[in-house]
Image 1 (tube, rainbow, N blue to C red):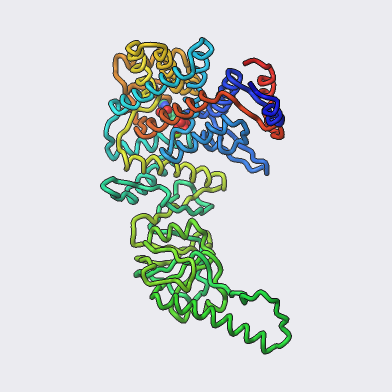
Image 2: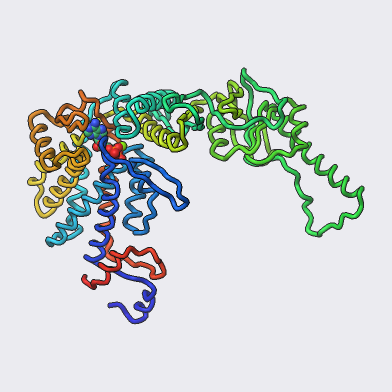
Length: 536
Ligand code: ADP
Ligand code: MG
């Protein structure tokens, strides 16, 4: 019973409960999936995204569409967060995750409307997902080097043209190889160690990887030297600026002598800091903030090359690639904080002078992103992120699965086989899970202009005969071996997508009460209309 007092507590909110809440949430998930389903697969269409300021992005990347969309519905937001997590963790499979989640929810709703309790649906879904994870490993195979390249290329299918795709995939695989390091007995490769700089005016296929970090900065004094044979670096998360006298009283400076005394004190203060920096024995100083003009000459005289106003992410990359410890205050700088670099040079691209530093540690790679327009450069840059995410993922776990809907179809077939062995209504949920998986080959076919129903039947039959690696090749229109066709995906992408979609769907199923703050002007109209129907 809701007491009067409680009622009044909720007077500022709109509320939907039970079945209505679930229906609304499922509708939101489906609406979101509908927004990206046409981008799935190599024949997916592009979306043109127009920002409030009129900026235009053309993409067929699901997560880009979702992250750009201004979505207010809480369920839709949850799904977008899930898709972003997929992007971060696996580097691919973002659209598939959203589609799977929405399909799982739709099928769950059907069961619940039939009278199956949500907890039983959840139980069945968890069982199915666990079974799917196991079966995925069985279908998977170990990738050769060539397979890695082919699977990176698959992750870019539908994006850009063949030439750019091949080029970016090769760059991504080289980057992943260069970044591979052993940490606690495991091979790791971290794609965030690649720095990107843009260089307009040349075709995308001329994008290249260069060793070290390239940062569009010049030394603070033109006579400061480069160190092609390496040296020591001090990284300062701060600057060297004049400190205002630390006094509470306000001084009335009337006397000229007093001003110059103050000035002399400030100078002395700067000199002290430069002295401490010099005493560390560094050759190179990279600072986040400004460096006072008076410090410039002192650093030059001390033989230290200095760069200022380096952005925080670049500073962090510099620290990682040189092994330096970031210092926050010049007077605290110590010799042990220094990192090592093997060379410091200047490069000029597009008339912009760039610092190029090669660190002593792993990492420190820069992708020079080229393209004739800003839009093109952005697309290439996003493409490389996808590609390097996948390539680095394969360094960690080199197992691969078939694309073209083969994996999902194989899982669906497997789950259908085991469903009857599960007693009770969970069986229905396992079948529902199986149906959700089939949405992937179905939508791939649909986006290629084929009949979704016929293609799924054809694929099912073809797998019965030819095994789990048979999928739909959208370029040739054939059902054939995905391995031979080079349509390959990392195992980790599917593992992540399936478990992520299952978790997201289950957490939506558990919601039984949605409270909207009434002040929120962004409640979608259909949400209001449904919610006010008053049904529970
Ligand atoms: P996601 O964001 O989920 O990665 P994509 O638009 O990248 O979505 O599409 C990925 C799907 O397209 C995967 O299921 C993959 O197997 C499939 N795919 C890629 N290339 C082909 C192809 N040549 N033929 C059929 N399916 C393909
Ligand atoms: Mg993809």
